[in-house]
Amino acid sequence: MFDRQPVASDKTQVTIYDSVTRKRTKLFSITVPYSPASLSKQFVISHQGRSFTFSGSLDDGQTYPDNEALLNDVAYLDDDKLLGYITGLDGGVARPLQACNGTIFDYTPEEKRQLRRHNDRIKRLQAALSGKKRRNGNKSRRCESNNQRHLANQISTLHGKIRRLRRNFAHRVSRNVVETSGEIICVEDLKLKAMTRRAKKKTQGCQTLKNGARAKSGLNRSLNNVGLGQIYTLIKYKANARNKAFLKINPAYTSKECHACGSRNTERPTQAGFHCLACGLKANADENAARNIAKRGVRDIKSGAFAAKAKPRKTIARRRKKHLESDLPLVGERPSGKKSESREDGLASLAASHVSMVETSGISPETSGSLHLPHTEAATLSTTKVDPSG
Image (tube, rainbow, N blue to C red; front, side, top):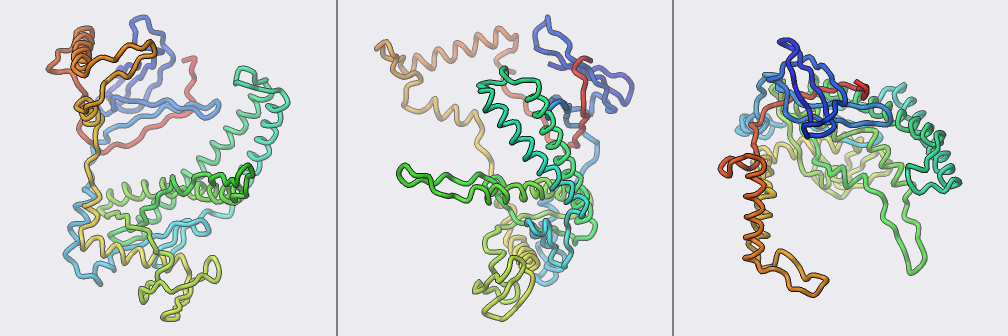
């Protein structure tokens, strides 16, 4: 659905069409400052309200060291010396990032004010939009009025501003972390998607009970404002570019365990307070967790646990093959009462349809199949506000 034509040695014109047929219509074209050989063979067009984004990948020609190889290079060191190379980072809401050396990475007061203002305005606009839909009885987007579309565009514009604030914060923090950290940066392997899920509905018979949905929604919004997943992704590639390693550890009990004595007989008198009842240590809870993260990084590097996480994924072809080799029929009982085809007939028809599709496409059976491209380190190009009229 797209075509690439070189404009100069370092420029390429990418044309997007509405279909892959011969009588296709040109939608728009865009010129990017990269050679055709460096561009990938896949592009993505996304939109947020009335703003469209055209993005893809490119090969910048640079080679970066392997993260696992960097970790293997320091595995021979003793525990105390290895701990000196590690910088532990604890992610949270009150403090987005807390380093084990006491450094705090947070939004500026102006950024916090802008986030709060944008979120408050989104809440008011969403309430107004839902009220208009309820009064007009909208059942689909075709029933929306121009006023409703205007409110929806305002909401999407505010979401775009919040997204850009988060991205700017992630780039600034990741750069500062990589510049001020040691040779190894260690973080928690958090399941952020599960942490930001909605609160489950609680019922008792026909009665709906309170489930703390409003408090959970506020916590989810705070976690999304931090953007830990995006920060960790940026930290990893920026650290590898500077020959620094990146490591994720198991986050279990990092906030409850005492970094001095290792006891879990602790308490949190306040959100930021930490008190160990075994040794009497009193410290900041986030800094204590960051120190525990650094200590667990030493354990994982010495044991080689970071390499054990790389497990091969099952491909679609394997699952399809397993389904075909099973004893279950391919087609179930038909509503008309006729029995389904046997497994052999189903396999024969599947093979015949495969041959017909290959002959139609003009691809020989020996060369048909998925195309595997070599893995290359890729950077991302993004150009916003593409005019669909061309």
